[in-house]
Amino acid sequence: MRILIKNGRVIDPQNGMDAINDVFIIAGKIVAIGAEPDCFQANHVINAKGLVVCPGLVDLSVRLREPGLEYKATLESEMRAAVAGGITSLACPPDTDPPLDEPGLVEMLKHRAKSLNQAHVYPIGALTQGLKGERLTEMAELYDAGCVAFSQSDKLLLDTRVMMRAMQYASTFGFSVWLRPEDVSLANSGVAHDGEVATRLGLPAIPVCAETIALSNIVLIARETGAKVHLCRVSSAEGVAMLRAARQQGLPITCDVAANYIHLTEMDINFFDSNCHLVPPLRGLSDRDALRAGLMDGTIDAVCSDHAPVDEDAKLLPFGESEAGATGLELLLSLILKWAEEMKIPLIVALSKITSGPAKILGVKAGHLSLGTAADLCIFDPDQYWKVEAKTLVSQGKNTPFLGMELQGRVKYTLADGIIVYED
Image (cartoon, one colour):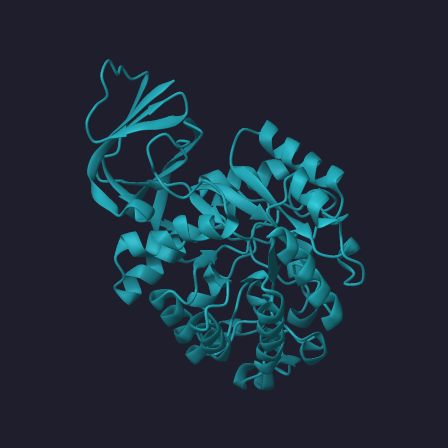
């Protein structure tokens, strides 16, 4: 199959490209950008005039809900949602049922995902057996089965000694450990940020120190063991400051933030809107501004959707009893464009946070448009507005704080391995 993408604004953050160009694809690979190759004859032409052509988006946290949680979503529905959002590579956390702690489960997930011929799925293996925080998994076997990193997802480690042993094991093999910093005893079943809104609404609260104390432990153990650590969804200004200091010391620590947190604060909970029940909780305005600043100066490497589809019944419960999580695959692009516009950030810089930045963390060959690489592309209209409505979301999960809002940036085409897997 030979595809010509004509007259698009081609933006490739990794290679510093931002210009009107043509893209030429043969047999699933990018063979030229700009000048037409000799004897090229397209089977299919996409007119991208007025559109942006960029690498397929890379998402670091996508719960596909399989195996075991198909009542919330299915692999088919969420893979369709991914490509509808321009996402061609995604990392799947291990908190499935059963968790991804056995090579057979990982291989099954990869086989199922590959058979759909849509986005590329990169499983994150369980750090401990059953995510119980007690016995380490056989990380080397899970890596051979296809895991690219190891995590506890939201099943936090209670035992610091287990964390240290896990980092020692990972460091020996060069594996990356992904951790969300939160002290379980301080979080203590809280559902909202420890601030004015939680007090007014009478909601059990989670203080910022629940994040910073855990973050301090992670940083110290990472320094001791030399392990590569990725921090998932830092949410506070103090957390960003601690991370910045650790990075300045040369520690191999990376970090992401979920797209919701660079726009929303505790005030958006309003009158117990369960769509704003997230983990970690939405924090104060100063925290949101610090996250935005951390993205700008490179302290935070990537933005993820933290996609977590939840069935409708679980969101209809009172705020404190509702299930945490929000759908985000189809909103990731629009939310990063919204951040870029509000902060006056060049588009090439904004797109790096959802393409080359997360791809580097995953350690995969994605997130760029280098010649000879797989033709994973997102083609979108940066000026088209669309309304976030349950009926328009492809994901089986309709739970998002942005329901009813108009967002800018609409995906028109998604290509994976040179195949058009989505067309608006």
